[in-house]
Image (cartoon, rainbow, N blue to C red; front, side, top):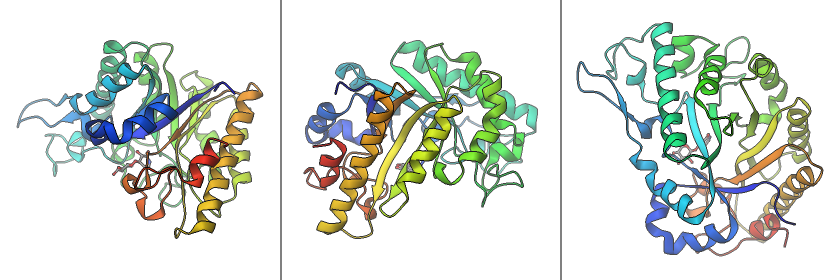
Length: 322
Ligand code: XIL
């Protein structure tokens, strides 16, 4: 089947310096790249000198952007507003690490400045390269959340602006994004909080500020895939474009049996995605979160398609439906 959706991979910057190792597999299998870390706020924001204003520096993302252009593939932009990997100094009055937090209006101003700057850079310099952006990442969590399930713990966006920082981020993103760039809400464990997500995004959806939901899809063998699939259908039925944005499937130990099971998980996920696309559903991208187990953020769970020697695992054959 000619693929009807992007097949993507997350790449950390150092892979572009070892392209002879990783390039062949990447170019053969994928037509969409996500920077694993290099487009996150901590990679872009530059702390000012005392008394100065912050700036942005995009050089850490350059290898990925250049490689994507060279290979003729598209990119996802990950991520604008997130409680994690965003420096505390960005939220303080004097831009110091320890300083007092700013008020809501000031932080809304900084949010607008940041979203405008990042979208302006990536879409202005490279028109058409990006097809989706994760505007807000991981904003809902019942355990770490307020009484409504909006993540509060460790979230300086929540602390400075309040729970409507999510709506405001989408508002600014819509103001500064070109029309072709799809605005996504991205989250983990979506199958356990699908109703919560839909409920909280409904204002932004009603006002035309959001296009899609990204299911990160950090899964483990043993989890209920039918539950995962029904959450996916729920998002589609609610009128959202759908993507799987960070797929990996962990196993507790590596042996023939667990590797085979992992392969089955990958096969079922890929079959599900293909089925959605064949049925004309608004499913547009499936990204795997890394290339091989040895370089995965979950390396202890061996969650990816290739092993340390870059050999195809049963997971690869399942994913490719071979
Ligand atoms: C992870 C990266 O893979 C790691 O290299 C980094 O140290 C931490 O972040 N959800 C997300 C991703 O949205 O950005 C995270 O990526 C994984 C969980």
